Image 1 (cartoon, helix red, strand yellow):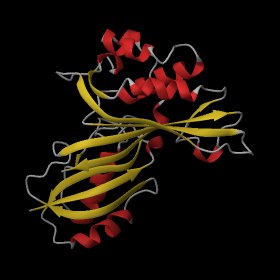
Image 2 (image 1 turned 90 degrees about the vertical axis):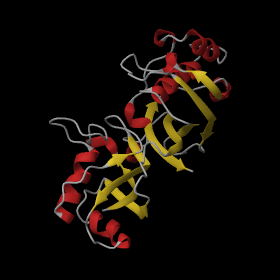
Image 3 (image 1 turned 120 degrees about the horizontal axis):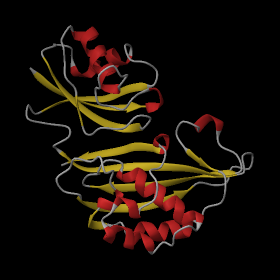
Image 4 (image 1 turned 45 degrees about the horizontal axis):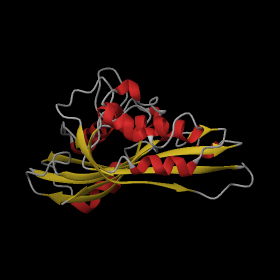
Length: 252
């Protein structure tokens, strides 16, 4: 048996998340069907983490065990011929037998994108949350600063979470603004969060709270108070899923 690791990119618009669910269309199901078609084996795929319905991935990492003799350099080409256009695999490599894509991950980066201005971008409508009125990006940046470091992120976690501990470390929290598109009279705001792990809906709740800061409904200083409250009701709404992308996963 060989343990093969791959990077998977996908547009999550048409899927009910990554992980297999009964009677649902998921990324994992599609990957495992393609592997079955290619190898004749029933292969279980392990991922670096789950993504919710509608969430995308630029760099999801998976691994799986297989007895197939297909050369590792041919896996991507072979699988991509069997996958739909909104899922792509790349960077196949052999890894140690004990490698586990979730347990071995030491750092993840998510990106949340907001299109702010007069018109949405038609061609990116599945990848950006559209906000038609101006946002105070400097206040949003200031709010992000309070999220850096080790904190109890209970306020930014769904009440449906089953994690034993809500303490996580955010290594980097930053925001980038693209140039104004003169045709659309709008621009994209990208929020990047890098940490050692993320709770259920954590990035989307942070994004929803920062949008309220940008709207002037909250001050940037309130982000610190929300953290200290350790109460989901203290934070803002959960932002729409289609603005979120799993951007990068790093290993030792």
